[in-house]
Length: 368
Image (cartoon, rainbow, N blue to C red):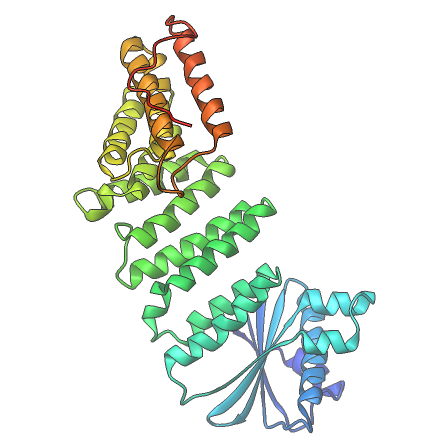
């Protein structure tokens, strides 16, 4: 963070008598966050501390309108401190009358720590608060708290590898994507991917690969084809020759990359063949995903002169649908509605290849 001398701002805060004249203040700024460090000050109660935080944060935001959140850090002793997070949204809501004083003060995130706390404990304290903000739909605040967890506990490198952290960042990105804010969705996913790579779990790690697939979905939604191809290309190249290359995650990466290429092109078909080979080698090949894999390759082949091979794949897809319809595994079993819709679609595609709507269904064994 760049330190802003902010003498005029600090003088104004003291002039407003938010703190005592002997209070020591420093302001640190980033593009959308400020940290106001408060020393040599002891409020009478926690409520007074919260009120002081709001008043000081409002003064900072008035001076720097781009600031979305102010972290007011009270240093009680050389080894104990408290962080209070005040967002511009909370201040605006209070000013507009949509939030009362009690709601404002109660809604401030408060983290109490000691310099003797372990990096893991510090990381957890901020991250738990971030999860609470995320659960309330406060995406921006949640991201700030997650970022603070990493900033305040840099020694806890394993934090990036915790399963819950990956899940939370996926939820964070989903929150941005729901608002079609694809830039921020991509940014937070790239951040956790980079952190995992720095901690030793690069793109060939299954958990990291799943995050990369989520990033690919964001690029697809944003129509950012160059970044999509670069991201998936990195994942696929890193996964070759590793255990990742035998997983559905890797097959899905191949299919997503194929989907970004010209339909019917040799490269698209090469990727789809590789993905299909992986899916067929996985136990329980009647999984509905196998049907999709067969159909995608058949669709690509049908656009070239390989109609016979395409027809065979459509028939294999029908056979796979039969198996999925009666699968003993409830997680793989498909409903009758999905079954009939999918089978009818395959027959229509067979008909388009000149085989007629009532083409013989080979290896079909549906039972109901």
